[in-house]
Length: 333
Image (cartoon, rainbow, N blue to C red; front, side, top):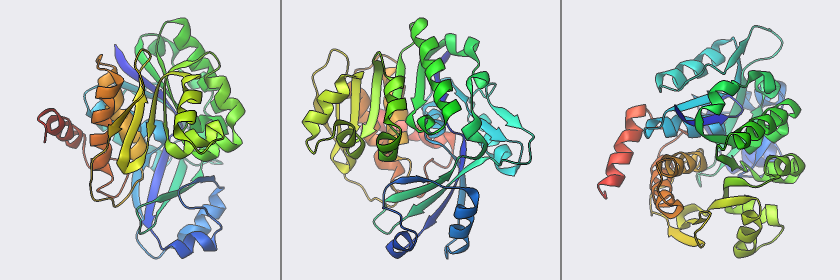
C-alpha cells in the first residue's frame, strides 16, 4: 500500500546566490514566485555571475522525496519531457524509492521539462521564476486512479491551480480520494497562488480538506487580514487540520479535534529558505500518517525545516540524510 500519493508540477531547480539589486533590475519582489517563459528565464540566467546548482524540484515532489526519506512508501504523479532535465528528475525520484508509474515522459520537441530559477539573496530569502514547461500539461489522463484508490493519503500542491489541466487533475484526484475515504492534504504553495488563482484553490477545498499547510504570509493573504489568529480561523473553514509555519518562530497548528497551539521553532543558522515549507510538510506528514497528533507532527516539522535551511538547496544530499535527521529527532538531539 502507498502511504502518501503526491501530485504536482515536476520541475528541475537551478539555484543561484544573488544581490538584492538583481531583483530590483528584474522587477521581482523578494520571497515570491513568478511564472515566466523560457526566454525570460534564459535572459536572467545569462546575467548571473555565480554558478547554478541543479537539483530536482517542484513543491509536492520535494515533500514526497522527503517523506520517502523519512520512511513512508510514496508515489508521485507529474509530467516531464523526455529530455536531459526530465531524465535527471526521474532518476533522483526513483533512487529515493518513489513510485513513478504515473509520470509521463512526452517526446514532443516543442516543450521542455519545467524548470525553476531559484534566486537566493544574502538574507537567505528565495525568489522563484518558474517556467512550467510540459508540467503545465499535466492532466486527468496522467492520474493512476487505481494506485490513488489504494493510497493512505493524497497530497496536492496549490501550484497546480496555475494550469487549467493541472487544476482539473487536482480536482479529479481530490474527488476520487474523498469517494474512497482517503484524507486530502493541500498546500497553498505561494502567496501568488492565493492572489491570482484563489478561485481554483477554493475548488480544491470546496468541501473541506483534511489538512492545510501554508506559511504566515499565505495565511494572512487568504483571510485578507494582518492578524494571524483571524487567518487561522478562516483556514479552519477549509481544512480540518491546519499548519501555519511562521519562520524561525515555529508553527501554529491544530488537528481536527485539537485546539490551536503554537509550536516553538529552533534557533539555527539560515543560509537558504528554499524548500523549508516542503521539508516541514514532509516531516509532519511522516508523523500524521503514522497516527501522531498534529502538534507532535509540528515538532518534527520544525526540527526538519531547521536542518534544511542550513544548507543550499531544497533537498538533503541523500535519502540516508533524512533518516539521520529522523533518528536525531527521536533521540532528542
